[in-house]
Image 1 (tube, one colour):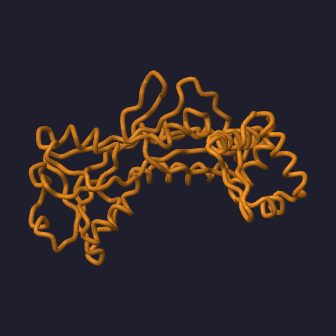
Image 2 (cartoon, one colour):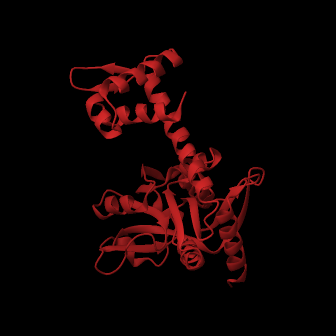
Image 3 (cartoon, one colour):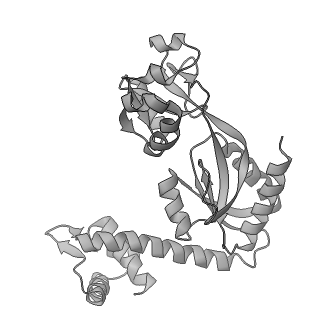
Length: 294
């Protein structure tokens, strides 16, 4: 199974049209058809169902698409790493980021790092722990930013300088805006939005016995989307402070939870990871910087 063939397969899967895919790949349609038939023969499975004007993936094709995307990404990452070994002014960094205001510390480090390595190129993947940790475990990322304590058997890590504070986002016109802080009892019976991961971990532990009376209306991986739903009156968003615009013009307000609930952030990497030179230099800078911040 060749990487080139997997690229052909992914192009057809994306375009759902053999002619369009061939044009994008700059190959003839017979060549493309031959490559895909060879791939099906090699795997012993039918990957596409062909219709009059389109091509759709079979269940086996969908499985291969997931695997092929990872394999092609890994091949591209490896090639870029080797190409950058002789470039002493830059290279490639791959980072998976949780959603947090503390990411500003990492952004500042990248800015400072680029002063010494102007040809640095960085690639950002955002998402919850499940999404980005999976990419880390597959070797597609150099560093991972987690909003939960990493597994020390798998990862090494350093803490970000500050914590994130949890609170509730809702319209300013809501009667809850008269309160300075929000307790678990205040949340009973309300339609709540939260990331599913945080709901089953941080929020559950914080709410205690009241948790069983609380209702998760919907789960969001991005706080901005949850805030839009809260603004439209569909529910109340549990999230970190500073992730959502709660200025006077926004129509939304933030109230911290009581007792206070805080979450630490961690810059994480695989325990037995072999770094590229640029990634190792970046890690050393971050370590030195984070340990000197009060």
